[in-house]
Length: 134
Length: 100
Image (tube, rainbow over all chains, first blue to last red):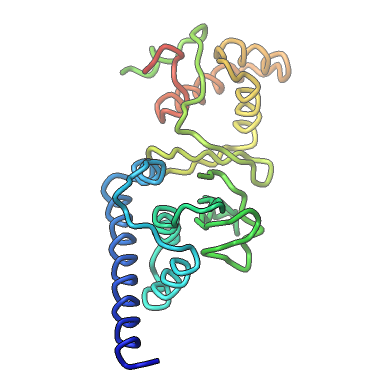
């Protein structure tokens, strides 16, 4: 690969990750200011001018983001994925689930494609009961 | 709104559309997506919620109370159920059928 191509790929890589970071922070802001319902309404809305991203590329970008920001909440990344994933023949489902551990409720958000976990998989994810899907 | 007046026994109520629920360890967990809050119901409240779920088109507090009074024959059942529905109404888990 020539230096020019490497440079162009690096630029593309950076732009994609910056884009995903911005959208994820947007959802963090929305959730903090306006709550869960507003965030879910945005996921249900059909905003045409949003640049969609190929699912594999998006998955890798978000996973990279999670390496640098490990405290980023699952609901922001799951919402970003659902919002940005490009239309295809595949259906990506946003799921909210709950699990009771030591009398304490835990919640989690993840993305599936049919039965495959695409984003935010956990070792104990099968213990979570799905309470909301989109 | 005064909640004592709001939850009338013969008025028809239904579950609000922003409410989702699931059973964990035999108790219902309710999620209100408007507030983002989770509510864990006790065993007895879960029994009442299960009865509410049987009435998709609406229910009256009187019907629910009569059923559980017949089952348990405890004097406090009526008051406990009314308190529970008052709380449900206050938290906007249920609404009157003609509420917007």
